[in-house]
Image: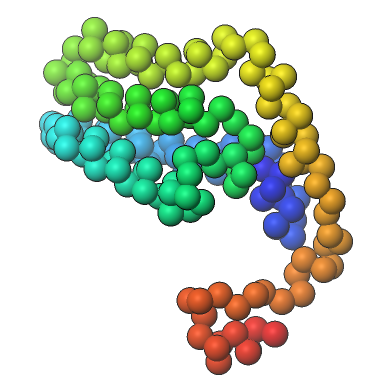
Length: 167
């Protein structure tokens, strides 16, 4: 949130970040699962393989490693990937359980999804380990607000004639 606030010309309160985060990450997932259950459509297990391949490809494409702490906030990236892969692996079982109204299967999926979070939540030394890294990224020297919004740099997707009109 703080990194986004530095890039935006306006303040970015926590409540707006939380709402935006859920709109981007939670609402599409819940909508997709509800649609699949309503249509009684199963999730093929091959989709799990595709999701794993594409998410790791995206991470390597972004910065040539799985640890995204340099782009985002410092975090336990192995546990994050464990949570991501747990979500991928349990989705077919969760959708099947919701279609069949097997609450035992749905509960087992939610327990499996809580394991990565619990390993992080119950680790007492985790907050201490990442607090210093987080504080260092948070307190980087800022440039004045007026210097931020002078001109946009030319990027490869903007033609030269359009970039000359920006400045």
